[in-house]
Image 1 (cartoon, rainbow, N blue to C red):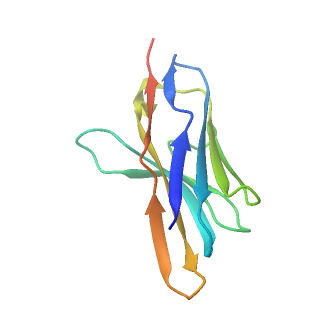
Image 2 (image 1 turned 90 degrees about the vertical axis):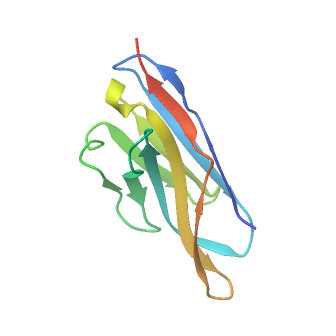
Length: 120
């Protein structure tokens, strides 16, 4: 069983910063990519940033230059540092991990989401 738990969301003023964390627990599962998505009501969930195991991070155009994704493999945790936040960044942010079980099956897992609200 794999659990994915996000934290760090909240209310922040425009121009402010937040750091989201996503902790993964469970054994026997080898994590490859760790990604952040976001979703607002009535819209599809969209990729914000991702980081593969041993690879370079990638970002949506809306996140480039403002957000930084990083991971701590020893702690099975991925972070999203968000700066220069705008009201349009308001959304529920979800963490998704992709990997493979020890017996070979690949799987994806999502967290429950954390609300980020950018407002004055």
